[in-house]
Length: 140
Image (tube, helix red, strand yellow):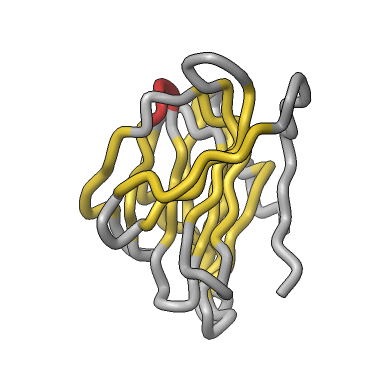
């Protein structure tokens, strides 16, 4: 979905399928903008370096930023954030356990980390050895 000078590089979709959040580059800047399918309009909800996007079935949008900060947003605005202290490379929400999985370079080794997005607490760490996945997916 290329529209005007927006060039999406990552996307996340709301549960109804009516809104698409995209990491976009425009005029040399990175931002997260939401495309409304009904009106065919873009609305920017965040400007700044974005490393990964994920969404859940409650309509939350998660935006991973540099230095381990994850913004918790709706598809209309970003409400708050939490710190992971990780260099995040990828992120996905798991509908089976409700956890937000991130791959990152951790304090000691690369790994995968599962956070409860409701409490922002780290639930588990999964070693990936020397591998650093830059794409992850969940198959229910």
